[in-house]
Amino acid sequence: MDQPHALLVASPGLGHLIPILELGNRLSSVLNIHVTILAVTSGSSSPTETEAIHAAAARTICQITEIPSVDVDNLVEPDATIFTKMVVKMRAMKPAVRDAVKLMKRKPTVMIVDFLGTELMSVADDVGMTAKYVYVPTHAWFLAVMVYLPVLDTVVEGEYVDIKEPLKIPGCKPVGPKELMETMLDRSGQQYKECVRAGLEVPMSDGVLVNTWEELQGNTLAALREDEELSRVMKVPVYPIGPIVRTNQHVDKPNSIFEWLDEQRERSVVFVCLGSGGTLTFEQTVELALGLELSGQRFVWVLRRPASYLGAISSDDEQVSASLPEGFLDRTRGVGIVVTQWAPQVEILSHRSIGGFLSHCGWSSALESLTKGVPIIAWPLYAEQWMNATLLTEEIGVAVRTSELPSERVIGREEVASLVRKIMAEEDEEGQKIRAKAEEVRVSSERAWSKDGSSYNSLFEWAKRCYLVP
Ligand code: UDP
Image (cartoon, rainbow, N blue to C red; front, side, top):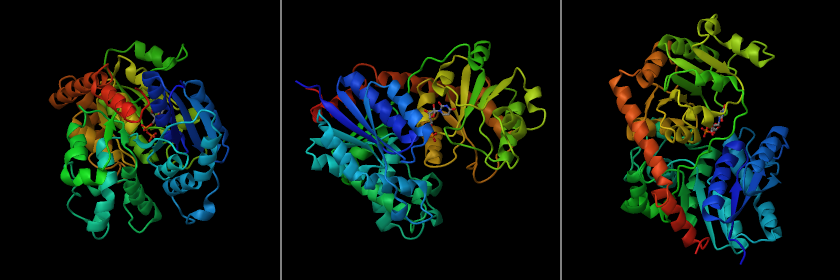
C-alpha cells in the first residue's frame, strides 16, 4: 500500500514557508508519511526567495513544489498592505493549486493550509481529499482572538482602539487594543475584512493544528474546547502539537561568535536579535547600545541597519560603526560582539553561555527561546508581537518587557539596562523567579514531545482521525 500522503500549502514569504517546512518535517519523521509542500512564491522570481526555497528543500525530507503566484495589483486597492496582497494572492492561486494537485501521481488525502490560505481549503473538496486542516504557527490565545473576531465585529461599535476596556474573549485573557494586530485595527480597511473572513473560515476546516502545547496554555485550550460561547465559534477540534521549532544545525567552524561564546561564563551573555525583518530607528539603536553598555552585561547583538539612518552606507562594517554611538565598539570590545549578517539564532540560543534573549517576540523566536530555557526581554515591534509579549510576561512568566511599545516611544538607556539586569543579574529576585520558570517551561516543552507527551499524543490523535496512521 502507498505511504499516506499529506499536502501542506505555504503562503508566500519565508516567514510562512519556514513554519510549514518545520511542520512537514515533523509529520514525515514522526508519522512516517509522505509530505508534499506547495510553496506559493511571491511571483517576482526574486533570487533570494528562490535561493531560500532551494536551501529549505536541501534540508527537508518533504518534497517541495514551487508555484509562482500571479500578479494581483489589479485586484487590490492601490495602497493595499502586504497582508492584503498576500491573502488576495492566495485566493487567486486556487486554480493553479488545483491543477498542481491534479497532476500529482500520488494523490494526497489530507490538506493543511496556513491561516492566510484558508480559501484554498475548497480545493481539497474539489479534488476529493478526505480532510482539510488549518495550521496556526502561533499560539492558542491568538487562535481564540482570530475565531472570535467575527463576533466582536458584530457586537462592538466603533474602532477597537477607542474602547477603554480590553475586549472580552470568552474563557481567555481579555485582549487590549495594543495586542491586536495592526490588520485588525482599522475596521473600514480591506485587511480587517480579510481577517474577519479568515476568522469565519478557520472553523470550516476539519480542525486546527496550533503551535503550542497543553502544559503551556492549558486554560486557553480548554476554553477553545469547552467554553460555551468560544467553543460554539471554534466548532472544530484543536490539536496543540507544539513546540515545532527548527532544530540545531551544523554551523561551519571556525565561527567567531561561537569561539567568543565558548570563552564566556555559563548564562552570562544576553543575545539581542529582532527577527528576520525587525529594525529600529537610529535614535532607538543608540539608546539600546548605551543601555547594553550601562547594564555591564556581556552581549551578542544582531544589528540591522536602522530604519531612520539617512547616511549613505555601503558595507556591513560601515553600517555597524555608522549607526552605533561614538566609541561604543571600542568601549565594549571583549564585552560584546555586534554582527550584521543573518545569525544562527537557534544554535546561539543553545549555547551554555546565553542567559537571556532580547527579542521582538515573533512566535518562532519565542519558542526557540522557551525550548532552550532562556528567559526573554520582550521588545515587541509589530504584528501580534505585543500580544506574544503579554503572554510571555503575564501568563507564562518567562519574560520582562518594555513599558511601552517601542514603536510608540524611544525606550531609554536606563530602562534597557534595568530590563537586561533583571533577567541576567543573579541576585535579582524577580529575575530568579523568571529564570526558574524558563527552566520549568523548557522541561515541559521537552516532555510535550517525548513519547506519550501531550503534543506527541495530540499529533497521533489528529493523524488517526484523518487516516494518516492506522
Ligand atoms: N532568525 C535567524 N537569524 C537571524 C534572524 C532571525 O536565524 O539573524 C530566525 C529565527 O531563529 C526565527 C526566524 O528567523 O526562526 C524569525 O521568526 P519569528 O517568528 O521569530 O519572527 P519574524 O522574523 O517572522 O518576525
